[in-house]
Image (cartoon, rainbow, N blue to C red; front, side):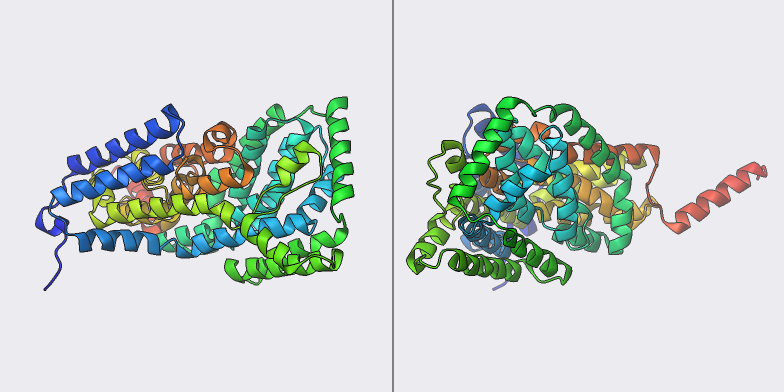
Length: 480
């Protein structure tokens, strides 16, 4: 017998879809912002209400379960990557890789210009590697430790790290999200990256200026004393050596050879274990297994250093994984019952001006991030909903692919229940709402993209549209 979904029996109306989304936003917003809850419980409550709504509309359990499976299925690879990153962090700390990065960083990066330096370093390395998650969980942890040691606001340092990592992820041809946006909009990858610069460079420059104003001047005696104390502690308790750069080099090589993330992370975990055995031959297999499973426990006697370096492990990632599963479940249900599609498609058809169209597409990407919390869906859904309308308005696919990045990819880090935000907050130990005001690049990218939509500056149009406009202008000049 053929299965019928509720949408086939009784199509969802625009008002109904918007009501569902607004109730979701209210519940999750109140839970996280008003009551300070972890996003897990509000998301679970919303899932229960969506299932109740679906049953009231006549959905059977098989259809509901199918939506859940479809949603979670898209996140299996990212979930496995998160688990590997948990193992990588603990191994890299134990092998002295992250402590070495901190010690060398203290010598290379000026305390006076620390925060803008952090933003630049993460942006440059991120562009080379193409993975914001990797930057945050490796170099980011080291830089975060340095910043808190110097006395900088942890939320400001986290914002600079995440902003730089997002810039690198957004502008790298090796980035999954950049390739996805290009593919969904059917634009050529390198042309897409080049066109991104119209909004990305202004956002980058303004962010850098803000970090210069907000993150300088920490070169006082107290900060230098803390740095010296931390360096001494790290030297006494970890193997600080230039060989620690080897895993970073391997990661660069893997990125440029386009080796997938899972294989790259497994290789680096293995390399870290080998380095640990070389530096500490008496290390037992059971202690390494415990560290990979439960994380590294720092016992230097220095309270601040121990707080910074007691982290990692697969178990530490399970809270992130559980929220990701719930978020993907919610996204799968909303997709299965056409809630998101119903809310977005009519909006795309009613827009008159180009600026309004670009703004609506960006707001749709932001909306998907807020309501679903999944980075890839924030690119896929608006891309499918707005592609035809963009082309009908004479806009090139490059215009759409840039909008998908500016409203989708970069915003997920600002949503407390978003997959990327949960990962960043859990890895750095700073809540999303705390670092959000300092994540300037994510905040500014959609602003400059919207300005481009209204001014037309950098807005790529179809050749036929340009030709017809030129012909119309010529005819007007000739009096025809």
